[in-house]
Length: 427
Ligand code: PMP
Image (cartoon, rainbow, N blue to C red; front, side):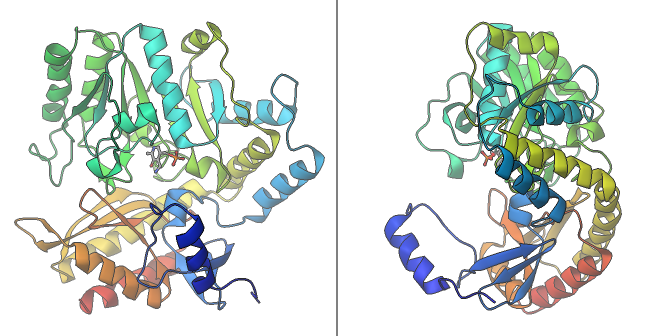
């Protein structure tokens, strides 16, 4: 039973004491007071199936007992000292994390968020190469600090930031892009940016493996291998932003980049790595990591024992409960059922994604691909009333983002489909 503050009181405090830029889903915003595995509970004890997972953040399930236990035990023993002393938690997690990455990617820097991880990754490329130019992909989201906001490439997430040295390449978007699914054609744009927009040498390239905030856009096949080749020829380093697509979410692989047959020079991660705990990381090779010894690089909370103990527990749960396999199995099943729903509802323009990172794009006109913005908000509200929470995003705000906790079951998928079907039928 919950007898804490109600939604109206929280709303009043939010409007008075919190940033006016904060927004919420739903006409009548939900007061969520508890989470358990794939479920969230509101102030009245009403249960919701969570198909958004705090934006692909909760990977093993809300308040997974093993993760809670690891965090609580560490919290009661030691919360913080500083990395200038030794503690096993940070070292154990770094070792476990390195074992999940290919090649020579084994040196870990811990941060507190995805933004921080990407800021550090960008800095490393610039230090390593002595160059300044960075190429990022249009429609990307990489964070909201000075450097990352420059690489983020959607105007609704950009303030008046100095985009020093950042070039935004054509988005290899199979649904809306000019070249359809021909990845190599889009990759020519990066080659031309290097040739016409830089000295010919660049610091690096950053990209998500599947765009999350941008509306679950899978990059056209062949794009990343061709771009990596161009960037490396120009002396640059390649960063894979795995903040959403990493940590078993895509099912077929542990990291999203693996499906593209590439090995990055730097991998950044956050969100799922902590199952809800603020934790991020940058992983690179011993040789590249050396550049940060030129000055002091320090992060007060990065790699603190509580978060790294939690992170290690997350990795163990993923393995013990075979959640990557579940993401593949249930995710593929859900994708098939969404595809079938597309046959029935003309408003569904596209179904895409991998594993438990799926997108459903709504359009009012299949030919023009006119974004169905109002319709999606209406459908989301309906789905909420029927007990299902789903995300939305994309540049036009018309894409359902389906990124549930990886413990989502086939029965959950069936329920989700049933509810989405009804919501779309009522439009
Ligand atoms: N990269 C990607 C791909 C993201 O989706 C996000 C967050 N939406 C970030 C980076 C930034 O992470 P954070 O919000 O933890 O700073």
